[in-house]
Image (cartoon, rainbow, N blue to C red; front, side, top):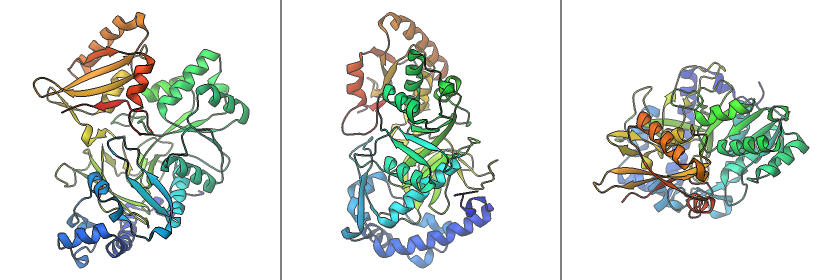
Length: 432
């Protein structure tokens, strides 16, 4: 099986032993080379001899996004002359953070994406159409590009262009796979329907989906995933990644969660007190990078909440798998005692066919509690119908009815493209 690392097919015990060795190598390097972690170990009087295995990793304090932001350059482990690429986070929840990569880090990144595309049933016979930006210090675009090259497959660098341009290229160059945000696939479907394009006669056979979840907590396709697959007979593969961890978790064809690459990353799921959660319970994804040279991280809390699966996957891999991200810890919303994350609200909105687009806002009410406001793009003659549909949907699913504001396309774009973020923003946190 080309490009599938042998370790991913080994037993769980063998994978654990392998990670122990990789972890010790990375830990020794970090304590020697990282100003931030040298200071942290001194402050907490942590001795290297006390950390003999991954069981002892809990002796090391976690690193937060705020730590990385405030001490950004103290995480750098190499001289400036060894940096060959500067990338940055998207800045969705604050100011962007710079991640500096060495040549070895770039090669690691390419390897990560190569085996990730292989996990998503990719091969050197595929032709990938990249519908995402490769500029603006965006690591993912660069990583996909290098990973596809390493895979030996063909690629078309299109970027996030209009559906008309995407379809013209699909028709002309005949890609077998797309790399895109799921909601943009819906725009491709809508355009195809308007133009009389037969989706299932196109060359496209699969889509690697980024930035948005395709699945519910029980690993079934969510509303967005069902709408795409119901209209277009293609295979969908979900992914999870972040710029800071320089690694991706990608679904195989069985769609049972994103596979960990044990040679590249160690994963913990922690509760709000930084203790490991019970098996099968959701926790904050906390990662230790393995093999990173420029800015390695120890017990880095991503802020993302998910469930891990540790049984063998039908594909034969014994690696840990991450379920869909339920939400970000900072974005947790309390509605009349019920905990909700933005993806749960998006799931309700995506069931409404008359809804063209939206932004969800959470704000502080008069009593100091969380309240929801929906900014909706809907044809004027369907406003009343939309209000009634959403009233019933939210009352039955979340036991709360949000306030609704109808806006036009220009107002929507102003809300979605706030600040310097590269991502289309569908959630605004206006809480005091």
